[in-house]
Image 1 (cartoon, rainbow, N blue to C red):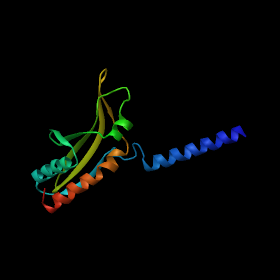
Image 2 (image 1 turned 180 degrees about the vertical axis):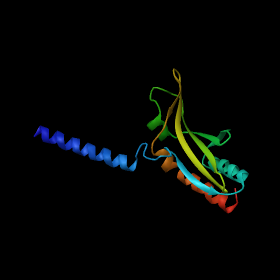
Image 3 (image 1 turned 90 degrees about the vertical axis):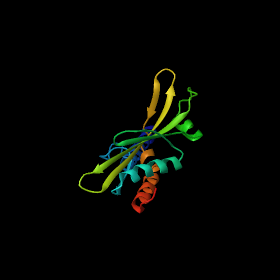
Length: 156
């Protein structure tokens, strides 16, 4: 009887793991763990300004801009701190969103991606960084969709 219960538990765990991997699929997306959108525009300045504006409206501060990327940062909520923070660390948890803007050559289209990470300063090891699997796809698709809507309508 004990063997049968253990076998059923193992089968249930295997089914759950298979279901999770088929829907979450760590590494199953060939583009990585981020959310993305294609935006048609010939105005790259409008695109950049709209990205900054929409992220600011969502509580982020614009912390840096590179050749094809922008970084935004905001302090995590109490829930973020509870889930992703280190209980032995009093430093706040931050959400950092890296947005890449990649032009599609030969067209007036850009591939815009967003990769979020959770960061917390650590006294001993510098900054710890975590990469939530679903957070990029679920939490930030709405932000990118709003950016696309505004840019393709021609307004920031």
